Image (cartoon, helix red, strand yellow):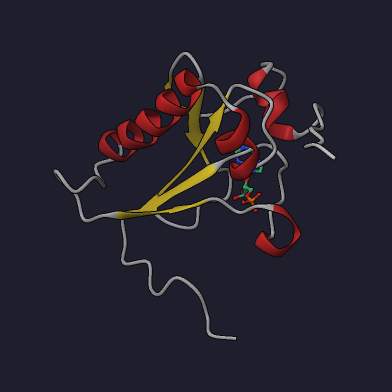
Length: 125
Ligand code: AMP
């Protein structure tokens, strides 16, 4: 059993240029764009250009070049948005995966959230 990637998902369509996006930064292997329903003053999604469903899929199967590019892009986005710890007040990264993680779009994306105090991470069960 492997990872089943749906190439009709909305982020695949953004990568193919079929749907517009508000790009924050792009690199050889990654794209960062504004979330369409922002939950904070900074809410950027960072996706790999490759066809990876989730963080685990990417972490286990992506090339080192893709992984380095992706991690650097996340850091660059934090800096561009002014939330990095060099200049700003901090941020939160979220990568929802699968059913229990409540992932809506089945193409890996890390949410970069910041620009306000974000509260505690989870509600107690
Ligand atoms: P998740 O629940 O982690 O899968 O998050 C999916 C995110 O994608 C949500 O925050 C949506 O607001 C965002 N989203 C869905 N469609 C678009 C789009 N066309 N452009 C930008 N963000 C989108």
